[in-house]
Image (cartoon, rainbow, N blue to C red):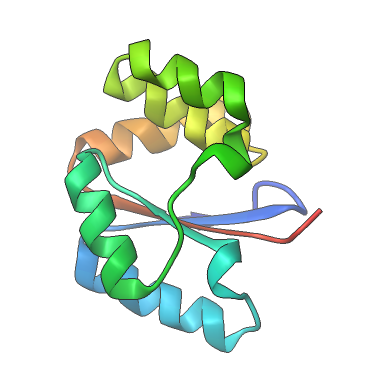
Length: 115
């Protein structure tokens, strides 16, 4: 499933890391730079591995801001994932949907234009 949720960001849920890497490569071909492409999986170590393999970014302090980054230390993983997704401009409803997909083992690839 892919969707253009707003003019700022594009998101696509893919079944696995291999397809996430392919999606990142496709986004690069369409003009996005590495710092505009993010990958997110339910397990943090899996996110790290996929981001490294794809040379994509992880959602961090730059995108979330200091307060959300610190708050994530005390959040459940589901709450942390939803916070990361909304930090890129998605609604709470969209973040809930994507977080449920991540729970199923899927990977989220996001491309965000610079504001």
